[in-house]
Length: 111
Image 1: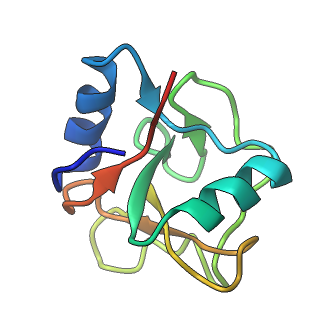
Image 2 (image 1 turned 45 degrees about the vertical axis):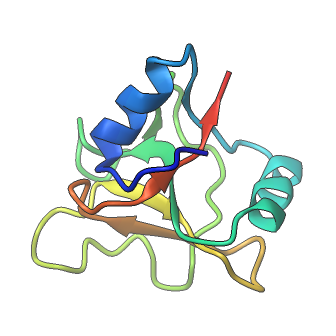
């Protein structure tokens, strides 16, 4: 996990400078593991920055299964909420939220 609060793009760059990328969560097992690990809201490697409404992972693979908080993704703030955070929650299988990519959070990297 990064130690500094950064935008989604800067968090991704932080990971890439270390030979990694933002984490891809594509199984329930991995979702459970990551959710049990985090203590604060963090960026994951998912966004719809390229095509609104079409979520893609940082390796360009499509989103097959999402673990969204109720009502998400919602593009809520009048500006595009194109980047995805993982939130600490008792709802381990439903704790993703979309946010503007410029918000500052830590990121989770994986090699």
